[in-house]
Length: 288
Length: 200
Image (cartoon, rainbow over all chains, first blue to last red; front, side, top):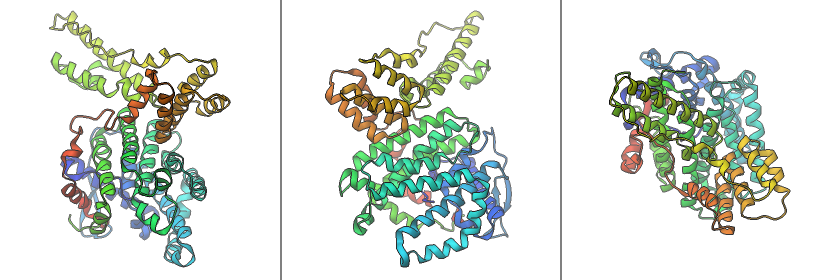
């Protein structure tokens, strides 16, 4: 997805870092088993967070290892198969698919060519995922339709536009799931936060391209970082309040790290412009 | 009832001081101020009740056993009833309040839109509905209007203050203000080498 949702490594204890990595690698393996070789396309930190959140509370984590897809010679700590990973994998495929569809539409006939080619490759995976979790697929489609409506009418309420995206993430908790209310509230505000941070990240580009940007309509062409920071802060406070009500066992410190440290840092980097730079240098560095 | 010691997350042999500290930390976490108008307020209230009961049970046990317990009298509580102590100026507003508290935002909104005269309370309630939905920017706009129209009303002021407070809400130990203490650049770099990337 976007990659905004990640822990701050230096503040994680070793065991917590191992658990995070094992979840990430576990999600990769789960995607591979369910969706074949295109799986790494769907892998993201954001959905790793979802897997951690949905995992049944366990007191301690028993690491087990598996062979890495990219380099089968090495074994890596990997979480065992779990329902939380399955759900996160399916959600990942569905979200990637609809995001791709969205950029196809935005980029027009010629610019959208690469996206269309990619869509052809990913369609079988999407088809499978949508069959496994039709409710989430339907919700994503409906909300994105609403979102494009808001964009067309150049909606001046950042809450209403962000709401459409927030509701998608809220729906990523399966119906009847343990702690559904708590997780739904947490994910709603995570979705709101992601949408607004992404809008801030795109502000300059949208201005140049003459595209709709909710922050521009709400705060004027320069945006208003103070006002935006305040409302993002409130969403993070509400995420924290929801988190504290749930049971997450040994995964709680990682979730706390992401919400209380990771999100504010990413937010700050997006605000001061360093995020774009960091994004370029980074993500798939080879350090083990 | 769950074992009161496990509710507070302390061992049976914890000292009175440790128990008090654990209780205070939990009470800070689930304090009504952190869950004002929050759709999950009922769950926080349950937690708070459980913690209060556990603390009382331990104190009772220890004092009857001749321990060093002194009546602390510092129980947090009752705060969750606060909401109902405010009264509405019209029966419609009273109904809207009840609907908001019950989480029926759709009906509350419809009822509110039937009111033709928009006064301070109208904007306050409209802001509360927005807040409940997680629409924090609209909540802020409405609360601001409410305070402007009725500057003497403490309830509106409190609601607005809560929204304007940056860094408000509970944060566990170790997460308080750490972000400002971290050097953004080096931290981000570390964050990047996370996980060996997509190769795994």
